[in-house]
Image (tube, rainbow, N blue to C red; front, side, top):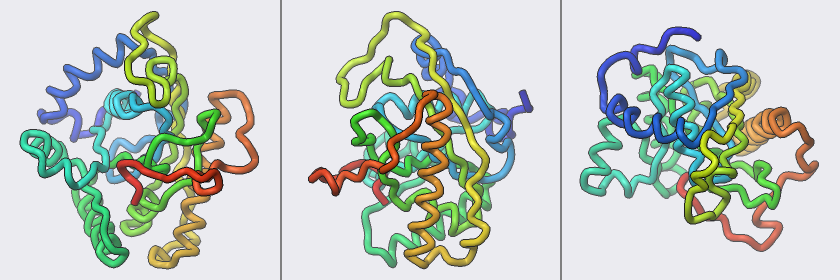
Length: 251
C-alpha cells in the first residue's frame, strides 16, 4: 500500500472522527478493494460513487481514509449554519452546496474548484444526488454537480462503485442489520473519466451532459464488475416514472 497523504498523517479533526467511525464500520463491514492504487495520494480529485443506502457515506468515508486520504463530502449549505455541526464541517474542509440560480451556481463551482486545487484536497460527490430509484439498485440518471466541479478546475474525475452495503442498511431501511458482523463490501475504483476533449467547455450544456453520461457509464461498468451481471440497457430516470427527484446534492 502506498504511504498515506500528508493530509491524513498530520493531526486533525479527522483523527478523532476516525477513532469513532473506522472501528464501527470495521465491525459491520469487511471492505474488499479493487483498484485501490487509482485514488491519488496527492493533489485534488473528485470521487464519484454510486448511492443506494443511507449508510453509504460511512462506508465510503472509511474506505477513503483507509486508502490514505481524508474523506471530504459536499454537504447542504444549510448544515453549515447549524451550531457545532457547521463548525465541524468547516474544520474538516467539507464543501457547501447551495440551491441557487445558474449564474450563482456556476460562480460557486469555479470558486470551489479553485479552493480544491489550491489546497490539494479531494472531495466526494454523489452524482445521482440522492439514493437511486432504480428497483435493482443500479445507478440512475446522473446530475451535473460532480462533472461541473471537475471541469471547472480541470480536476481528475474518478468513478467508484461499492456493493454490499444494502446488507447492513437497505434503501430506506430505518435501522442497521448488526448480525452477522463483517458483511463483505466490494469497493472498486476506476480510472479518471477522460474529459480532455471537453476541456474549456464547462459552460456548455451539451458538454456537461456528455461528461455526466460518461461518468455514469463508468460507475455502472464498475458496478457490473463487482455484481457480476449486466446493468439494464436504459438508465433509470425518475421523471419517466412520475417520481420527484429530491436529495442532498442535486446540483
